[in-house]
Length: 388
Image (cartoon, rainbow, N blue to C red; front, side, top):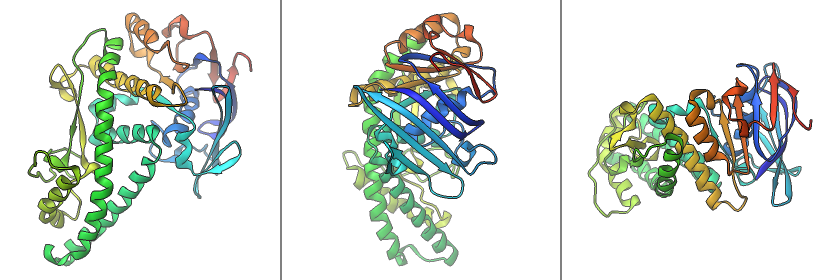
């Protein structure tokens, strides 16, 4: 899979932009703040329905505009698709494929990309929510159906939390909350599906992660991914509640059984706090290097290598499983962080992908073999693009 052309309207600092793309490596060069990252961010949005820099879609719309449009021509196996999304400030977003309307959540079916940026260091050093979001985005890319599963789980969770808050305010006893059991059934059904899918994903990522880490770090530090499940008794630090309820683990129990038991044991504390304390919305993923947690023990370079390897492993997993071929690999301002040896290793690691998009402030930071197709960006304008 590769992008052949990108058009933007009122996206970030671009009033309009039209950029041709080549197979293989495409390098976008410009001083910081000129808009090169905005170009690749737009493509990242098409495959993940989100930005790697901001949480709100409205931040992606140019100041003073009511809507932004991202339009990309995608090619695979001789077939070309026109994929479009319109981001609206005051209405629902809209999407099209070959001018036919689709639901925006269906976009990942048609375009797949994996983006690595400096912000991804937070995967290793940041809060649990960042790692949950990483897993869920990858789940949706592998199977877009999970977009609906996650949305349904979040709706049920919100309703259950509302009921818990209401019960806390009115001092209702646990045995008087029959309505809560109904929400528990739905939460367990959706949450267990999400937990099992995440566990399967982590297992599938583990092998390519080891290879990817070695390819970018030059050493084997035995990277591992260890799920931390609150329904199995894990105590996860989270921004909302620092001390979730611990539950008794039952070896060999199904995910649904463990979830039900966890909710039963947590109910008194949940009524006291007015919040659902166990479930996939509070789980975490522990990263290990050489048997120690990467968070708190890994150096900056090791943390950077782990985060980058995690994205390369994601790309490898998608290319193995997808019927549409390689995902488009996006490296945003990566090479400035690396020495010459690591730049060469990374260039070798990504050389086999059908298309790689790279941003850099300094042309000399990027190995020559990745700079054959160079696009120069200045103040939200494409000032030089081969073939334009």
